[in-house]
Image 1 (tube, rainbow, N blue to C red):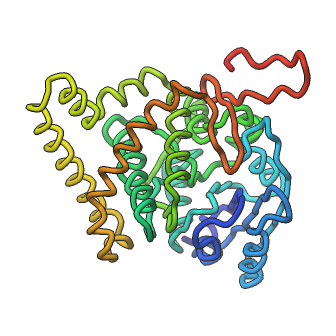
Image 2 (cartoon, helix red, strand yellow; image 1 turned 180 degrees about the horizontal axis):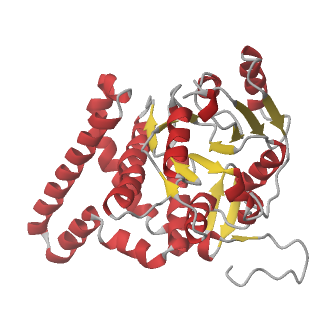
Amino acid sequence: MTAALSPPVSILKPVRGLDDELEENLESFYRLDYPFYEILFALDSWNDQACEVIRKVAAKYPQIPTVILAPGHDPNQNPKIHKLSRMESESRGRLLWITDSNVRVEPNTLSRLVAEYLSSGASLVFSPILGTSSRSFTSLMENASLNFFTSGNVIALWKLLAKPVVVGKSMLIDRVAIGSFGGFQFFKDNLAEDYLIGQSFLKKGFKVRTNFTWVMNINQQVTVQSFFKRLARWAKLRYQLNRPVYIMEIVLNPIVLALLEAAAFGPLFWQPVLLVTALKILLEYINFLAVNIKDRRRFLNHLLFPAAVVVKDFIFLAVYLTPFLSSTVDWRGGKIKVGKNSLICPTPAYEGYSLPLKC
């Protein structure tokens, strides 16, 4: 991409704690084949362990302008939006590229996204997520979930139903477009900011596009607890965003249907359960071979994959119930209560404090 066709880009990276291979993730953004960009980081505090890693990487690439901020944390606002708002005010680019700290990209990723922005006239360009780098049984479950359930459903909605759905691991956004809402701060009261940014752009007449340029979500070591918490958080957000669709998601799950039939009609229906399970494993394995080039090089992943799919789907069955039991989600070490449309319900600071009606 020539300099004349390369609008300046500000890369905004909210960071908290040490993600798997954080240094390598950050370095991938300093090696982009794009002429004009800066990178801004926002931490909760200067004591965050990630701060040292950021400084180390930035020192290797002094030619790339880098800004590190520590805006703190407001417990009654979306933590990510709080950081994005501060970075937005300090940034200079015409385009804002939001990427999470556990994301890794190829050198041509930004060029491809900007090319889509320029050719389509879009105000938001979205990237699907590729979960990769599995080094444990649980990380294999995590990445299989991201690649088949999350990215699979999102891509199906884009391609089959022409319904843009945005997941915020990577979003290239036009500064003027987000500025028309008053900046990222407009979305501070909702936890599902990525989905709502996409929907708000569409409602206002801005184009939302993707050219299916993947970004890698690095998950090497994942605990069962963190995996369950992430699934539960996303389940609760989906429930609050669209309850009828969430109920359909449960009812139409093939394993749920097969188990219900077996429970209702007895032993004869356990055969369909086994058949459905085998087909589900086969579909996910084909997807694994097709998209996860890095993980398929590790022989142990092939041996563990069938069991990972089965265990993952049983965890999913338990997760489906969580929105009916609690509206509180775990987020980066804290707890946030969410209401309808993922509205963040503030913690009452004093007696007589009234919560929003949708909480």
